[in-house]
Structure formats: structure tokens, C-alpha cells
Length: 133
Image 1 (cartoon, rainbow, N blue to C red):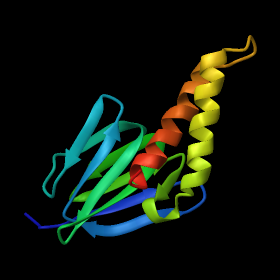
Image 2 (image 1 turned 60 degrees about the horizontal axis):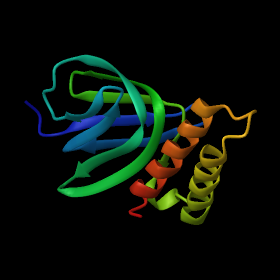
Image 3 (image 1 turned 45 degrees about the horizontal axis):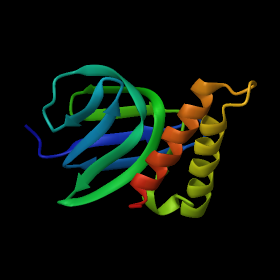
Image 4 (image 1 turned 90 degrees about the horizontal axis):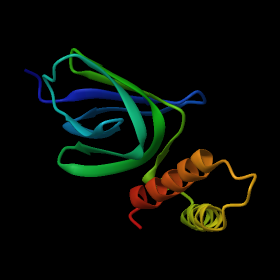
């Protein structure tokens, strides 16, 4: 059994992460899921949330928004709509997005798409959590 797992996080725009990692924890549709080297093959749906991973014992985070993950042969490939590394996140913008979504959900105007507003709130909160806020 190898001591690392290859992790790739890919969006339609770019490869966000390609690293050899000790472990990763992904926001799966049914809850957070830990992946270690030697993990059984799996395909899982991803949810909006925070991806965390360790490289040589140091933890890193990224905000992701849905998609799918495949794990096989010590390689995890995450195909996600968006992914932002913690250091790329504009915290002020994420705070504004969170406030805007909360305000829309509180006021509930007739034209409000509640599902979209709730997803926007979850994305903003994931970005803030990944950025350490």
C-alpha cells in the first residue's frame, strides 16, 4: 500500500489541484467522506462544501461546489463546477454574497428562486469556511 494518494481537482476552466496527498476529506452528497491511500474504488456525488487535504501533515482547504469524485488505484479525481483554494478566496466578496443571500431569503420576494438562493448561501459559507473565517 502506498503512503500517498494522487488527487486532482478539475473544473471546466482549469486543473485547480494536482498533488500527492496523505489524505483528503470531501463534501459528498451524503456527508463528508475521508479518503486514504488504499481506499476501495468508489464514485460519489459531491455537494457544496469544503475540501480539506493533507500534504506531509500540513492541512490545506478549498471551497468546492458540487460535481463528482472517482477514486481508484490510489487516485482521486474530483470533477467540480467550481473550486477555489483558500488563498484565492476573496473574503470580502464572499461576505457580501452571504449577506445578499441571507437578505433575499429573509425577505422572500415573489420572484425569488429559493433553491438558487439557498445554494448561493451555502457556496458563500463554504468559501468563508475554507478561507478560515
